[in-house]
Length: 257
Length: 306
Image (cartoon, rainbow over all chains, first blue to last red; front, side, top):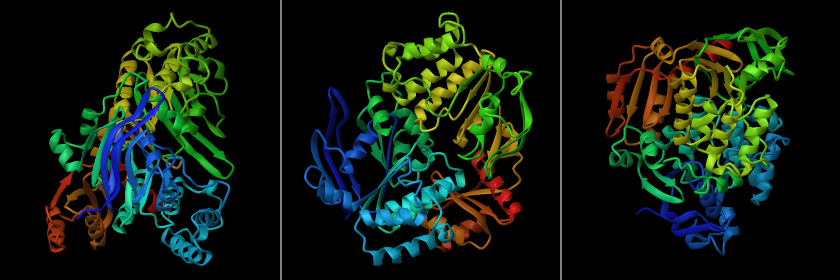
């Protein structure tokens, strides 16, 4: 039996008269790689902020990692990890300092932290870079480290908001190797991306347009349903770019900036 | 139209451009394809006279980027990677501002921007900072075109933009090309290479190859085999463990395999995967895409430098 780790029922989020999330209902299963796609301004970032306990919904029933999004946001935050396109690492701290900082925030004991940091640096082949500032590291290393830090406290769910922008094709794929590995270890991965080939790597994909979920299924079934050769074609059929910025747009850009 | 001759640029110890030479023909749609840190922005800033090279020379429509920088600014339209319009000015104020700076008017050159500006005109009184990503991009392009440039330089115009808006943006570029403008555009999205007349694949300040996208993939010497099964993660693991595996990476719903030599046959991989109990296995040889070539060239660069 599939275990639901995220349950969303009739989620509505309004900003004044503008509806960013218009009655969303979906479940995400434990250990799955869930792709959360949509055009710019479709309402993805708003939904992610609600699911990670940073913003409260206007209405709807939501449960994340076993906790209620209205009353248990602090518990949610302890049980999830988050990584955004704008790396959540401190540029003027070293690699080791960043790890220590995050471990501290999540209340990991110094003993456990030392053990885990050693393992992590070895796995990332970054033992020699331990005392280097983040600012001087190649983009691919930063991404790998940002991901590792986001899952350092062994969360049940990790949210990745466009994690692979701007890297070379090899680094981008190595990053996906890490995502698969995390999913294999039982961590649920909730990911947004503009690379449609990456949508194919997800177990299931939802596609949002103008605040609503227009499609949700496995990539294979979506391609079959829309009679499309790849996910790019599926996406183009569902998400029509709206020329009206009041239908989305504004809000998402503002929260990103 | 654009001539780049042995341009070098370093920031402290980092060599951003290592003696780059390149020519872009008149009315060409030319792509600089490469990841962050490849040197794309540095090269574009040198060409748009915003940055001085350490050595080498470059010409835009016959004008030297150092000696004739003032003239170049009148014939080049530049759209930088970061949104650089005035967020507190409205859509139409931004456009008028740029027109005035270049000593022209919006009406005089409206013809060129009509198709693009038309889409944001209903919101012309809205502040630029309040626009969605796709709208900002259209406004920035309108502002870069308002002085009717001969050459358009666009730094990653589609980064972070969704697949639908990306497609629209490329359609706009094709139309501008038909109006006689030479376009130099950079992108980290490899699939956009196919939309250019010619591309330069660039990585760590060096050009890996320059050609039409078709010829770049045609002349790639190695065999690419793709495979699929029900368990993609295990498939990658198993293929990497195969004794003659050189490179194994996910490509959409498939995994692309390159062998240590090119006599690895699809049939032997098929047998191997069946022995590993994979279900619904499909293995076949395919023509390489731009990403395959880029990854292959990156590998050979690395092995040469070691």
